[in-house]
Length: 461
Image 1 (cartoon, helix red, strand yellow):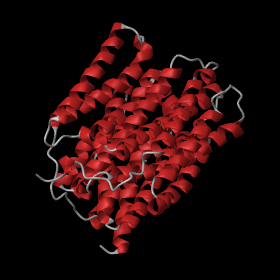
Image 2 (cartoon, helix red, strand yellow):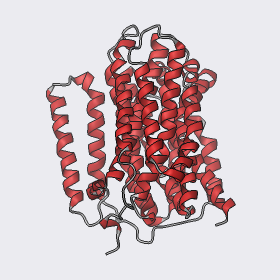
Image 3 (tube, helix red, strand yellow):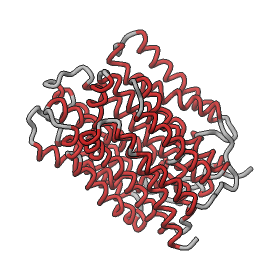
Image 4 (cartoon, one colour):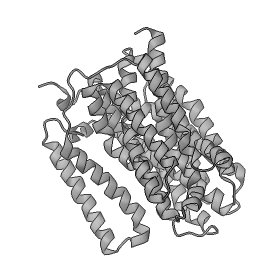
């Protein structure tokens, strides 16, 4: 393809990724409005957010494998159609149960977009430096969409009500479908991975159990028989997943991949970054709207520094990765996120707005620096022919981190009154700082001493 065609393909993929990231966070700022509209409390609202991210996290790897086998453009277009239809169902949902179900279907569609878009970009950019720059732009758009979600959500709620957060997806989906048909070429892996249905079922169940335990824990009691049963079930399912995947010829997620320190660090870093981001967004929404009585638009606008930091720093991070490797950008990400979390660890009811904005700016800068080195390191750990699987693993880690962050933040404040919320959220800000510190640790192993070896299961036998 010509250079113009390659960058056009990137633009089309970025448009779809904007939708996936936007719908991960846009609902956060609308939670109080949704709760009032459908008559549901904080506990039910957590499922409104996590139904999307749980399904998305559970299906990403299989969607990447499907795209490698049946055609990336075909799966990409299918994902757009499912996502668009589910968005309309969300906008028309008459109850919280219907909304949660529609959000889950939305996650199915989104799972066909995230890893597949990355695979299309990687295969369209054969030059490593050009690919690193493209991944930086891709990460920038994805980061911008997640950071801009609360701002756009607040504006839409103020102007048109909470249902407009889902109506807005329809014209974007139509535009993406048309552009994909015109500009995106069809591509497949030379040797596609077989579907691993037992692995898929166990992975989805393990993710649902682990996050569901955190969401339901405050309601059922952390030491109740039901909670203990959920802990045991999570452990058993996770062990069964690792055991079965270790003995399959073509596993969904080969545990041997995690013997590579760089790849493992990239996956864990993705979890840490998205835990920090989603804890920040949910605590911001609840604190500003419930404790300080801000409107949804004002609460969303408060995250503008975060969006600005992510937007400015993500392309710069991609260029740094292309020139000097992932270690420095990942270390910068860790430092900024740590500083942002520590600045709010003593949050009060009347904490200075300037301090809030500074914290969001620092976290946004860290988020912007983080995505490119994480994605580049993970993709470099697998052969280009399995780019869909590589994208699926890192995207799964991101969405698992997002669901985990929402569940943890919700568990911290679910029983707090508006006057207690600031104090109850302090452990959440400590967690954000801890996630940043973990990124500093992962930066040490993000650059391998030797070129990354191809994992054994990726080779044709």
